[in-house]
Image (tube, rainbow, N blue to C red):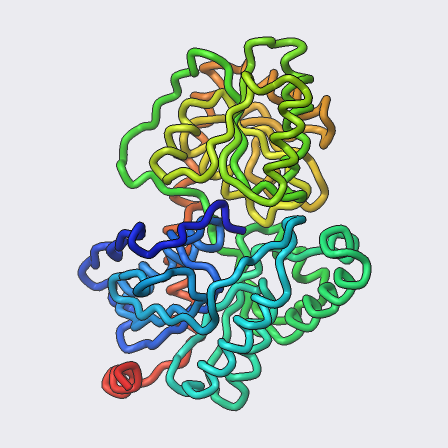
Length: 426
């Protein structure tokens, strides 16, 4: 889910595709469509970053790529080297006051996707889509009936019935669970990013071809060893949308509990969301205004600096499909403290005592985890750096994108280059 939103395309800079290496144009002549209702860097989140890296890799591999999305700009569509960006629905707020995805924008994007794609049903050799929001998946499946074009679905997470009801209420949640089951049944090719994700998908009745991609760890393109220096003063960092399932309302009490043993400890809360006002009120009521800083939306460069300056990063989420914040934190050499909630798959990225701790999902459990991470000092930060370097190549986005290229080579429709090029231009 998005961490923050940039409203004007004038703030967006073009990110060039990776430089093509000789002999890498394996998808030459393939026409690929990617569908997601958010677009990096207009919105930031795990899925957005993944599709940015993936699409760039598809382009570098010789594919012609169209990215269909929801309109998130007020002027011209953002420039993206080698990619045609198409808006099939209008600007809309995705979340309500409780941080729950609104139904109307999802339906609008689904309808727009169907109407746009059904007229071009035979143009593409493969269509890639995120499983959520489900309406676009259903729209694509319907639009491609009889076209012979395979649909590849990324399942970043699969929710239990109990969590659906917690998230959206008993009636809406039950409906959401039924739609999720329907989408799983309509999926032939699925991708996940953890073994646990594959197990969840199978447990919900998936019978198709599922591929566990490498992961979403951030690659260090600089080639330099990251610093493992400990911050001068203790700071705990939170990064994420201010919504219920991220556990943001717990942060003031977690800090109070930890400060009972470490009075100088401070907290930085990054991003924004519908629960920010309530958290700010709690901070004022508990007398923590001098100990907690709200940064709001920040740039990637600033976020990276905040990770590097923090003693540890706290992830009190009820649910995470992968845990991009964990990946970004450890890539900066900063250990993480992750709540051991049943649907928080970010725990799979934590090796206790090596790059952080998985703790009881309680105020005391998380505050004790923070104190342990800070007490780990330089040795823990050094082992976090080493863990990140060790896993970035085998569990990173770049590797996952390359694996997806191989998957498309195996299963996507293949047509002669001349015909595919003519179809793309039409």
